[in-house]
Amino acid sequence: MSHIDTKIQKQKGVVLIITLASLGVMLFLGSYFLSFALTGSKISATQGIGIRAYYLAESGIDEALFKLQNDVVWKTAFETEPNPGDPNCSSWSITPYIRDPALIANGSYTITVTNLGCAQAEIESKANIQLPSGSVAQRVIKMKVFKAMGSPLSDFSVFLGGPAENFVVSFVNPLNIHDGSLFSNKAIRVKNLSVVNVDNKALAGQNITVDWSSELNATSCASNICNVTCDAISDCPPATVGMPPIDFDSGGSESYIYIAQNDDCSSVRTDGKTNCVFTPAEFEQVMWDNYPALSLPSTVVVYVTGDINLRAGQDLTVNGTLLADRDINLGKDLCWTKSEPPYVRCGTSRIHVVRPGAPADNLPSGILASRKFNTGIWLGIDGEGLHIEGLVYSGDEMRFSSIGASVEIHGAIAGRKVSFSSMWAGVDIYLEPNVVMDTFKDAEYSPLITIEHWEEEY
Image: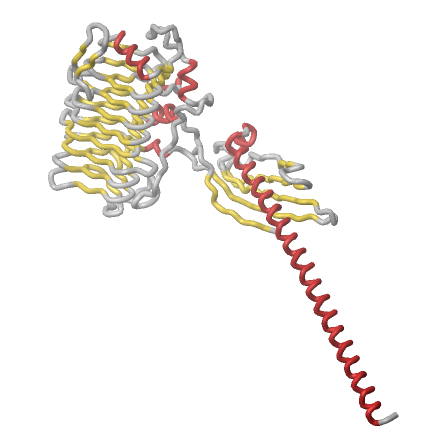
């Protein structure tokens, strides 16, 4: 073999080695990328299953919250009230609840509610998804919840809750708040020759301001003044307090429209109906037909599906509760015209709300407006314009203005924004916690469940 042949043979061997090495590297890289792709696919699939398990566990939490609000057994247990024998409510319990299947194929969750005290609990939702391989994907969500006890209204004759605006008193002498306190989530302002006397405390989430011509005689507490430890709310200035809700028209057995539908107002109706739910036109006709003095039936709830306008010398006695699904206007109009005799009526009006039955009957009473409550200059007969044994409530603004007659309220006032102006005959508000609670239908616990803590586990 020649030297040239030997050299060629060696070159062929090197090429073979390089080729085999290249093939090996390519095979390794191909295997690596295939393994990487398979691993990524498995991770993606695992993440997808994990997300489904998480949302499945969250569905268990949602169902637990719903049952605590609406399921009679769960709600009754959760809202066990403290008593001398069991002040911490340690006796209540709820049996673990399993939903299987739940929402997705091979999915289930178990809800466990642990008693932490009176209307306090830890909810655990453990979700499982059974995989084809025989393994199980699991997620666990835990949440601590509670309901606030008591009512913020039990200590207050005048209460501005929720996203409250200001409590304003202008040209009023005197405004006397008896036996209770005054609370505003925002400011309290007393001005223009006004005198306000509060038996207990004047509390504001922001400032309390009194101009040079006016007086506020109260133990005051706000961001700009604190002359006492405000133990009624525990902070100085006081913490924000929400407005307890009134169920106007949900249709449930506790809603006012349901009660009115089942009460009897046939004694004042001439349209063939018997219930106590009126359209605005129907209620105006009742007032026109029973002029000047209208006394609504005793122990009933009268529900008007729009505005109520008391005017033109109408003398109205409410023996229970009068509600408007919109606004209530009292004494804003001197005259009233109608297309039937006597066509025109004029005069100053009066409203008197009487709490029916004995206090032990726990019956509601008051004047409740879903939106605004307003008074006007034409409210007042024989020196008395407004006498109420019950709650005066508005879901929006409340204005007492230009009343020449006296105003006396035995119950409380609750609204978002409240003002008194140009009232020289005096205003007296006497706190009556029982009638207020009976009218709000406020349970021992707040209607809202508050989430205190949330955590997740795998």
